[in-house]
Length: 108
Image 1 (cartoon, one colour):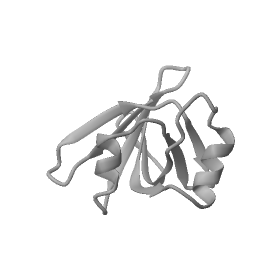
Image 2: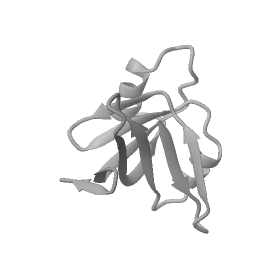
Image 3: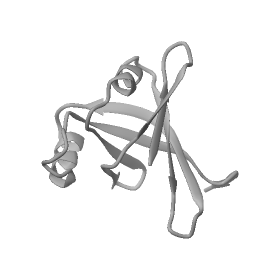
């Protein structure tokens, strides 16, 4: 999966992420294994991001939303529970889903 954020000047940054999971009905949890620019972008305050991925049937999906960075608490503990120990587990990034697309078509 590709995880994209931008800084305060609007400069984009994209990284590959491997440790991603659903979190409740309206959020995606992403493990911060070795973020640097991505972490800086999220911590600017009013951060938004997107997650882009392909499904086995070769359909592209994109999920967009507001980002939260957690180094403790429920979201962080959930990330620790399913992220393998061989990966750094610095923090949990919560993507609060605001929009979801399959190709150019928005999914309700």
